[in-house]
Image (cartoon, rainbow, N blue to C red):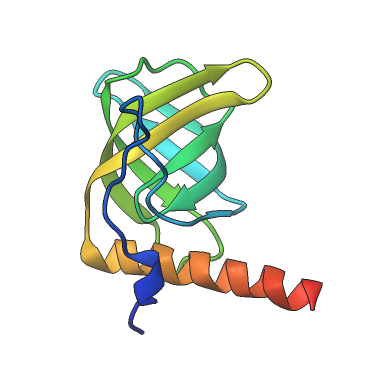
Length: 128
């Protein structure tokens, strides 16, 4: 199945130089295994996009750290594996961290894009 073309886009920046969200995301139930070369963490998946993910309640890895992730969800036929960089750690109302993918297979990226598209379509159909 080919990924919807409207989900593919280029990096954009806000006037102050911060990155804008490039890919649509979906909230999914699942678990993420995160390995930072010294420790292995398992935490709940909050949301995912073809560009990265947000992990709920995990705040032990500093911004800038390179990590390997395995995402397991019933929405995916097989676990998603990727390498990424921690780009944000949130400690206020929403606790967790954001990881931007730096290396992910095209098959895994397409799997995520298809899942996000299906998630968005389900939301639209529920409203209608």
